[in-house]
Length: 122
Ligand SMILES: [Zn+2]
Ligand SMILES: [Zn+2]
Image 1 (cartoon, protein in one colour):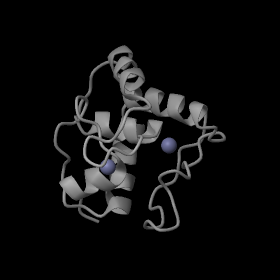
Image 2 (cartoon, helix red, strand yellow):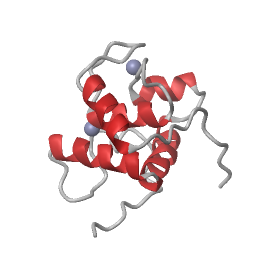
Image 3 (spheres, helix red, strand yellow):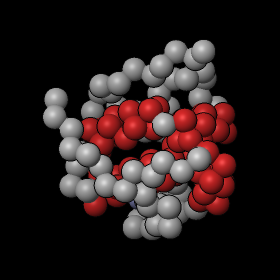
């Protein structure tokens, strides 16, 4: 499958990412006002929307992508970068996601089936 690079990939060290994560955690989507979960905050940071985080549906709409496809693609970026991966781990912890499973808040039945497998915990 072809993947176009995503805009604004942010690769700052993790303390800055974790600070942004805490600042945005529990705030609302700048488009639809729905409260963001931690995973959506990480997605927004990974896509460079640190001053205007959005929920998955609004991110996908803004980028003209299918939500399930964008979700799996951004997830791969997150797992590739230690700074985002650590913030993702914090989101998993806060939302009670067991081990390193794909969180049910974003991998829902009404979205595409996952095309990614979470890496094993080491
Ligand atoms: Zn939204
Ligand atoms: Zn979540």
